[in-house]
Image (cartoon, rainbow, N blue to C red; front, side, top):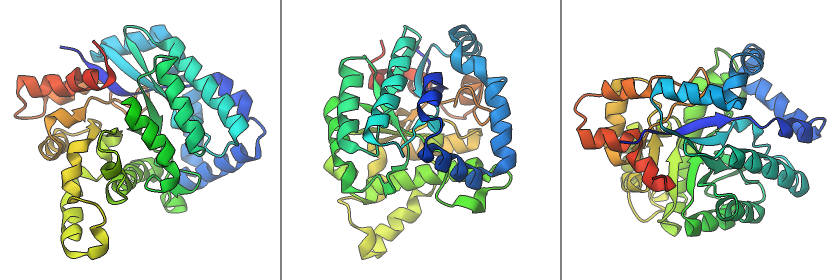
Length: 329
Protein backbone atom coordinates (compact mmCIF):
# COMPACT_ATOMS: atom_id res chain seq x y z
CA UNK A 1 0.00 0.00 0.00
CA UNK A 2 1.58 3.26 -1.16
CA UNK A 3 1.39 6.49 0.84
CA UNK A 4 1.51 9.64 -1.26
CA UNK A 5 1.38 13.24 -0.04
CA UNK A 6 -0.08 15.54 -2.71
CA UNK A 7 0.55 18.72 -0.72
CA UNK A 8 4.28 19.31 -0.20
CA UNK A 9 6.41 22.31 -1.14
CA UNK A 10 9.85 23.43 -2.17
CA UNK A 11 11.46 26.82 -2.65
CA UNK A 12 13.56 27.94 -5.60
CA UNK A 13 16.38 30.32 -4.58
CA UNK A 14 17.04 31.42 -8.18
CA UNK A 15 13.65 33.10 -8.31
CA UNK A 16 14.60 35.65 -5.65
CA UNK A 17 17.26 37.11 -7.92
CA UNK A 18 14.84 37.25 -10.85
CA UNK A 19 12.20 39.30 -9.00
CA UNK A 20 14.42 41.46 -6.78
CA UNK A 21 13.82 45.15 -7.35
CA UNK A 22 10.85 44.62 -9.65
CA UNK A 23 7.93 47.03 -9.05
CA UNK A 24 5.49 44.13 -9.23
CA UNK A 25 7.37 42.31 -6.50
CA UNK A 26 7.28 45.38 -4.25
CA UNK A 27 3.53 45.70 -4.83
CA UNK A 28 3.06 41.99 -4.08
CA UNK A 29 4.98 42.32 -0.81
CA UNK A 30 2.91 45.33 0.19
CA UNK A 31 -0.31 43.42 -0.51
CA UNK A 32 0.85 40.47 1.58
CA UNK A 33 1.56 42.86 4.45
CA UNK A 34 -1.99 44.20 4.21
CA UNK A 35 -3.51 40.71 4.11
CA UNK A 36 -1.44 38.95 6.76
CA UNK A 37 -0.24 41.81 8.98
CA UNK A 38 3.29 42.68 10.00
CA UNK A 39 3.45 40.24 12.92
CA UNK A 40 2.61 37.22 10.75
CA UNK A 41 4.78 38.33 7.82
CA UNK A 42 7.81 38.79 10.06
CA UNK A 43 7.20 35.50 11.86
CA UNK A 44 6.97 33.67 8.53
CA UNK A 45 10.24 35.28 7.42
CA UNK A 46 11.99 34.03 10.56
CA UNK A 47 10.67 30.52 10.00
CA UNK A 48 11.70 30.57 6.33
CA UNK A 49 15.24 31.52 7.26
CA UNK A 50 15.34 29.07 10.17
CA UNK A 51 13.59 25.74 10.66
CA UNK A 52 11.91 25.69 7.23
CA UNK A 53 15.10 26.26 5.22
CA UNK A 54 16.63 22.74 5.30
CA UNK A 55 13.23 21.08 4.95
CA UNK A 56 12.56 23.07 1.78
CA UNK A 57 16.01 22.83 0.19
CA UNK A 58 17.85 19.75 1.48
CA UNK A 59 16.78 16.38 0.10
CA UNK A 60 18.20 14.46 3.06
CA UNK A 61 16.09 16.50 5.48
CA UNK A 62 13.04 16.03 3.26
CA UNK A 63 13.44 12.25 3.08
CA UNK A 64 13.97 12.01 6.82
CA UNK A 65 10.77 13.95 7.44
CA UNK A 66 8.90 11.79 4.94
CA UNK A 67 10.13 8.61 6.63
CA UNK A 68 9.11 9.93 10.05
CA UNK A 69 5.61 10.70 8.71
CA UNK A 70 5.32 7.36 6.92
CA UNK A 71 5.19 8.98 3.46
CA UNK A 72 6.53 6.96 0.52
CA UNK A 73 6.17 9.64 -2.16
CA UNK A 74 5.67 13.40 -2.21
CA UNK A 75 4.12 15.39 -5.03
CA UNK A 76 6.22 18.53 -4.74
CA UNK A 77 5.08 22.01 -5.78
CA UNK A 78 6.63 25.44 -5.34
CA UNK A 79 5.68 27.60 -2.37
CA UNK A 80 2.77 29.85 -3.42
CA UNK A 81 4.78 33.02 -2.68
CA UNK A 82 6.76 32.23 -5.83
CA UNK A 83 3.83 32.29 -8.28
CA UNK A 84 4.53 35.95 -9.15
CA UNK A 85 1.54 36.30 -11.45
CA UNK A 86 2.30 40.01 -11.86
CA UNK A 87 5.28 39.29 -14.13
CA UNK A 88 5.29 40.16 -17.84
CA UNK A 89 5.74 37.38 -20.40
CA UNK A 90 9.52 37.63 -20.53
CA UNK A 91 10.09 37.59 -16.79
CA UNK A 92 7.33 35.02 -16.26
CA UNK A 93 9.07 32.71 -18.71
CA UNK A 94 12.29 32.96 -16.69
CA UNK A 95 10.51 32.35 -13.38
CA UNK A 96 8.62 29.32 -14.66
CA UNK A 97 11.73 27.88 -16.30
CA UNK A 98 13.70 28.21 -13.05
CA UNK A 99 10.96 26.65 -10.94
CA UNK A 100 10.17 23.76 -13.23
CA UNK A 101 13.81 22.91 -13.83
CA UNK A 102 14.39 22.92 -10.08
CA UNK A 103 11.42 20.65 -9.41
CA UNK A 104 12.40 18.33 -12.25
CA UNK A 105 15.84 17.97 -10.66
CA UNK A 106 14.18 16.71 -7.47
CA UNK A 107 12.23 13.93 -9.17
CA UNK A 108 13.11 10.42 -7.99
CA UNK A 109 11.35 7.27 -6.85
CA UNK A 110 10.31 9.29 -3.76
CA UNK A 111 9.34 12.56 -5.45
CA UNK A 112 7.05 13.48 -8.34
CA UNK A 113 6.84 17.05 -9.54
CA UNK A 114 4.03 19.53 -10.05
CA UNK A 115 4.90 22.40 -12.38
CA UNK A 116 4.16 26.07 -12.08
CA UNK A 117 2.91 28.15 -15.02
CA UNK A 118 2.44 31.81 -15.86
CA UNK A 119 -1.32 31.64 -15.37
CA UNK A 120 -1.62 35.38 -16.02
CA UNK A 121 -0.65 34.57 -19.64
CA UNK A 122 -2.94 31.59 -20.42
CA UNK A 123 -1.56 30.67 -23.86
CA UNK A 124 1.97 30.76 -22.48
CA UNK A 125 0.80 28.75 -19.46
CA UNK A 126 -0.63 26.09 -21.79
CA UNK A 127 2.71 25.80 -23.59
CA UNK A 128 4.63 25.70 -20.31
CA UNK A 129 2.42 22.95 -18.94
CA UNK A 130 2.85 20.91 -22.11
CA UNK A 131 6.64 21.21 -21.88
CA UNK A 132 6.65 20.43 -18.16
CA UNK A 133 4.79 17.18 -18.68
CA UNK A 134 6.17 16.02 -22.04
CA UNK A 135 9.77 17.21 -21.72
CA UNK A 136 10.49 17.44 -17.98
CA UNK A 137 8.39 14.50 -16.84
CA UNK A 138 6.34 16.45 -14.31
CA UNK A 139 2.89 15.07 -13.50
CA UNK A 140 0.70 18.12 -13.12
CA UNK A 141 0.58 21.75 -12.09
CA UNK A 142 -0.07 23.92 -9.06
CA UNK A 143 -2.05 27.11 -9.61
CA UNK A 144 -3.57 29.79 -7.40
CA UNK A 145 -7.23 30.71 -7.10
CA UNK A 146 -7.07 33.67 -9.50
CA UNK A 147 -4.63 35.53 -11.71
CA UNK A 148 -4.45 38.80 -13.62
CA UNK A 149 -7.36 40.09 -11.56
CA UNK A 150 -9.62 37.36 -12.97
CA UNK A 151 -11.36 34.37 -11.39
CA UNK A 152 -10.85 30.90 -12.82
CA UNK A 153 -14.28 30.91 -14.50
CA UNK A 154 -13.15 33.70 -16.83
CA UNK A 155 -12.98 32.54 -20.49
CA UNK A 156 -9.57 34.23 -20.50
CA UNK A 157 -8.14 31.03 -18.98
CA UNK A 158 -9.64 28.69 -21.56
CA UNK A 159 -6.29 27.94 -23.31
CA UNK A 160 -4.82 26.73 -20.05
CA UNK A 161 -7.75 24.53 -19.04
CA UNK A 162 -8.01 23.07 -22.56
CA UNK A 163 -4.33 22.10 -22.42
CA UNK A 164 -4.61 20.66 -18.92
CA UNK A 165 -7.59 18.57 -19.95
CA UNK A 166 -5.94 17.20 -23.09
CA UNK A 167 -2.75 16.37 -21.17
CA UNK A 168 -4.58 14.68 -18.29
CA UNK A 169 -2.66 16.98 -15.95
CA UNK A 170 -3.30 16.92 -12.21
CA UNK A 171 -4.25 20.49 -11.19
CA UNK A 172 -3.56 21.36 -7.56
CA UNK A 173 -5.31 24.59 -6.57
CA UNK A 174 -3.46 26.29 -3.72
CA UNK A 175 -4.13 29.93 -2.77
CA UNK A 176 -1.92 32.53 -1.20
CA UNK A 177 -3.63 35.49 0.36
CA UNK A 178 -7.29 36.41 0.12
CA UNK A 179 -9.45 39.01 -1.55
CA UNK A 180 -10.82 40.03 1.86
CA UNK A 181 -7.57 41.92 2.37
CA UNK A 182 -7.04 43.95 5.55
CA UNK A 183 -10.02 42.42 7.34
CA UNK A 184 -7.80 39.34 7.84
CA UNK A 185 -4.60 41.11 8.86
CA UNK A 186 -4.76 40.13 12.56
CA UNK A 187 -4.18 36.79 14.29
CA UNK A 188 -3.07 35.08 11.03
CA UNK A 189 -6.67 35.11 9.82
CA UNK A 190 -5.29 35.61 6.33
CA UNK A 191 -4.29 31.95 6.47
CA UNK A 192 -6.79 30.56 8.99
CA UNK A 193 -9.85 31.91 7.18
CA UNK A 194 -8.48 33.41 3.98
CA UNK A 195 -6.86 30.34 2.44
CA UNK A 196 -9.91 28.04 2.76
CA UNK A 197 -12.19 30.87 1.62
CA UNK A 198 -10.12 31.39 -1.52
CA UNK A 199 -10.16 27.67 -2.34
CA UNK A 200 -13.93 27.58 -1.83
CA UNK A 201 -14.35 30.53 -4.17
CA UNK A 202 -12.08 29.09 -6.86
CA UNK A 203 -13.80 25.70 -6.90
CA UNK A 204 -17.19 27.42 -6.95
CA UNK A 205 -16.13 29.40 -10.01
CA UNK A 206 -15.13 26.18 -11.76
CA UNK A 207 -18.58 24.75 -10.99
CA UNK A 208 -20.92 27.70 -11.47
CA UNK A 209 -18.87 29.16 -14.31
CA UNK A 210 -19.23 26.02 -16.41
CA UNK A 211 -15.52 25.17 -16.57
CA UNK A 212 -16.22 21.62 -15.40
CA UNK A 213 -19.03 21.33 -17.94
CA UNK A 214 -16.72 22.38 -20.76
CA UNK A 215 -13.88 20.17 -19.54
CA UNK A 216 -15.36 17.12 -17.78
CA UNK A 217 -11.99 15.34 -17.87
CA UNK A 218 -10.16 17.96 -15.81
CA UNK A 219 -8.41 16.53 -12.75
CA UNK A 220 -8.68 19.20 -10.03
CA UNK A 221 -7.68 18.93 -6.38
CA UNK A 222 -8.46 21.67 -3.88
CA UNK A 223 -6.00 22.28 -1.07
CA UNK A 224 -7.01 22.46 2.58
CA UNK A 225 -9.88 20.04 2.15
CA UNK A 226 -11.38 22.13 -0.63
CA UNK A 227 -11.99 24.94 1.83
CA UNK A 228 -15.61 25.17 2.93
CA UNK A 229 -17.13 23.86 -0.31
CA UNK A 230 -17.69 20.16 0.51
CA UNK A 231 -19.12 20.72 3.98
CA UNK A 232 -21.47 23.50 2.83
CA UNK A 233 -22.44 22.19 -0.59
CA UNK A 234 -26.09 21.93 0.50
CA UNK A 235 -26.44 25.70 0.45
CA UNK A 236 -25.14 25.80 -3.11
CA UNK A 237 -27.62 23.09 -4.13
CA UNK A 238 -30.44 25.02 -2.52
CA UNK A 239 -29.51 28.16 -4.46
CA UNK A 240 -29.39 26.12 -7.68
CA UNK A 241 -32.97 25.01 -7.00
CA UNK A 242 -34.47 28.39 -6.10
CA UNK A 243 -32.35 31.05 -7.83
CA UNK A 244 -32.34 31.21 -11.64
CA UNK A 245 -28.99 33.01 -11.74
CA UNK A 246 -27.45 30.17 -9.68
CA UNK A 247 -28.44 27.53 -12.23
CA UNK A 248 -25.99 28.55 -14.93
CA UNK A 249 -24.41 25.09 -15.18
CA UNK A 250 -25.85 21.74 -16.29
CA UNK A 251 -26.18 20.00 -12.90
CA UNK A 252 -26.63 20.85 -9.21
CA UNK A 253 -23.34 21.88 -7.56
CA UNK A 254 -23.05 18.67 -5.54
CA UNK A 255 -22.99 16.63 -8.76
CA UNK A 256 -19.60 18.16 -9.58
CA UNK A 257 -17.99 16.81 -6.43
CA UNK A 258 -17.46 13.64 -8.45
CA UNK A 259 -15.17 15.65 -10.76
CA UNK A 260 -13.14 17.16 -7.92
CA UNK A 261 -10.60 15.89 -5.41
CA UNK A 262 -9.72 17.30 -2.01
CA UNK A 263 -6.66 16.95 0.15
CA UNK A 264 -7.09 15.58 3.67
CA UNK A 265 -5.72 18.62 5.51
CA UNK A 266 -8.76 19.32 7.69
CA UNK A 267 -7.10 18.53 11.06
CA UNK A 268 -9.83 16.73 13.01
CA UNK A 269 -11.27 13.27 12.52
CA UNK A 270 -14.83 14.62 12.63
CA UNK A 271 -14.22 17.05 9.78
CA UNK A 272 -12.33 14.35 7.87
CA UNK A 273 -15.24 11.96 8.32
CA UNK A 274 -17.65 14.58 6.97
CA UNK A 275 -15.39 15.32 4.00
CA UNK A 276 -15.19 11.61 3.17
CA UNK A 277 -18.95 11.20 3.54
CA UNK A 278 -19.63 14.09 1.15
CA UNK A 279 -16.86 13.60 -1.41
CA UNK A 280 -16.27 9.86 -1.17
CA UNK A 281 -13.12 8.12 0.04
CA UNK A 282 -11.92 7.83 -3.56
CA UNK A 283 -11.89 11.64 -3.91
CA UNK A 284 -9.89 12.49 -0.78
CA UNK A 285 -6.09 12.53 -1.10
CA UNK A 286 -3.47 12.64 1.63
CA UNK A 287 -2.04 16.13 2.14
CA UNK A 288 0.30 17.55 4.78
CA UNK A 289 1.34 21.07 3.63
CA UNK A 290 4.96 20.07 4.21
CA UNK A 291 6.92 21.66 5.85
CA UNK A 292 4.79 24.50 7.19
CA UNK A 293 3.37 24.96 10.68
CA UNK A 294 -0.19 25.03 9.35
CA UNK A 295 0.42 21.51 8.06
CA UNK A 296 0.61 18.21 9.92
CA UNK A 297 3.44 15.76 10.46
CA UNK A 298 1.27 12.76 11.42
CA UNK A 299 -1.18 12.38 8.49
CA UNK A 300 -1.51 8.60 8.76
CA UNK A 301 -2.25 8.67 12.49
CA UNK A 302 -4.98 11.21 11.80
CA UNK A 303 -6.33 9.03 9.02
CA UNK A 304 -6.37 6.01 11.32
CA UNK A 305 -8.43 8.02 13.83
CA UNK A 306 -11.26 8.55 11.33
CA UNK A 307 -14.05 6.18 12.36
CA UNK A 308 -15.56 3.65 10.02
CA UNK A 309 -12.92 3.52 7.28
CA UNK A 310 -12.53 0.20 5.51
CA UNK A 311 -9.10 -1.08 4.52
CA UNK A 312 -9.76 -0.19 0.88
CA UNK A 313 -10.96 3.32 1.74
CA UNK A 314 -7.90 3.98 3.88
CA UNK A 315 -5.63 2.67 1.13
CA UNK A 316 -7.28 4.94 -1.43
CA UNK A 317 -6.89 8.06 0.74
CA UNK A 318 -3.38 7.22 1.90
CA UNK A 319 -2.08 7.10 -1.63
CA UNK A 320 -3.85 4.70 -3.95
CA UNK A 321 -6.01 7.26 -5.72
CA UNK A 322 -3.24 9.87 -5.92
CA UNK A 323 -0.84 7.27 -7.34
CA UNK A 324 -3.34 6.53 -10.10
CA UNK A 325 -3.96 10.19 -10.89
CA UNK A 326 -0.25 11.01 -10.93
CA UNK A 327 0.89 7.90 -12.71
CA UNK A 328 2.97 6.59 -9.80
CA UNK A 329 3.60 2.87 -9.70
